[in-house]
Amino acid sequence: MNTKLYVGNLSFKASEDEIQSLFSEHGNVEDVFIVKDKFTDRSKGFAFVTLDTAENANTAAEALNGSDFLGRPLVVNEARPKEERPRRSGGDGRNFSNDRRNNDRRF
Figure (spheres, rainbow, N blue to C red):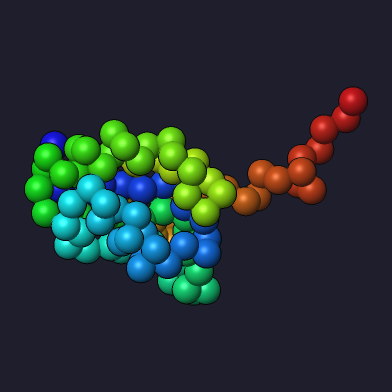
């Protein structure tokens, strides 16, 4: 297991300090990153927490997964690398000319 954890189902009001305090009970927290919407700067409800050792990360994941934090049950597991998805450009394959207004269906 690596030292970075995915923390899901977070309250949108959770702060980095609150998350750090929760995870520091299981080891030295090196980083807390709350993922936010780039337009509204509002939390998306998940974060990444990096602990100092893989052993501490594993202990924290086992102890905190499913536990209540700010009224919500947390989902805590090992962070996985972001999957590469094809970039969308102007021609993303969607055809809007086939919507209901243009369909000539008779029932």
